[in-house]
Amino acid sequence: MSDMNPEDAKIITLARSARARAGAAEGAAVRDETGRTYAATTVDLPSLKLTALQVAVAMAVSSGAEDLEAAALVTAAGTARPSDVAAVRDLGPKAAVLVAATDGTLRATLD
Image 1 (cartoon, one colour):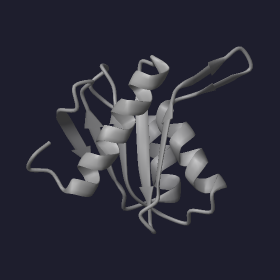
Image 2 (tube, helix red, strand yellow):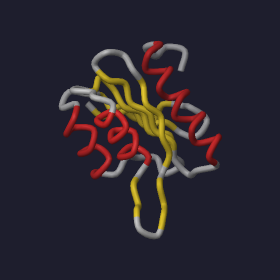
Image 3 (cartoon, rainbow, N blue to C red):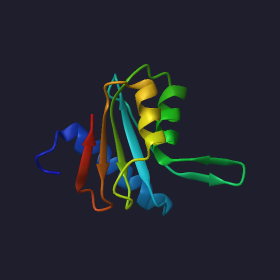
């Protein structure tokens, strides 16, 4: 992550921390147009199932964000689901989606 934009490295770190804290398979974080960040993990309840990125986007929306600058997903899966990318694009059409391994290594940037 050393050659990455420090703000992008920060949201990957936040996503990793959320994942570790909850013991979840995935962690995510987003940065809104004002620089505020929101970190989340997957919600897997009998009556509610959301991916980590969907939760992070929902947190941003419920806090009044009007746009996203970037999103990060930390996952062992190696890629973001189309539904995750769609959730990010709904709020931030130009936001980069950073996909990182569980050790924080950037695997892909979806523009």
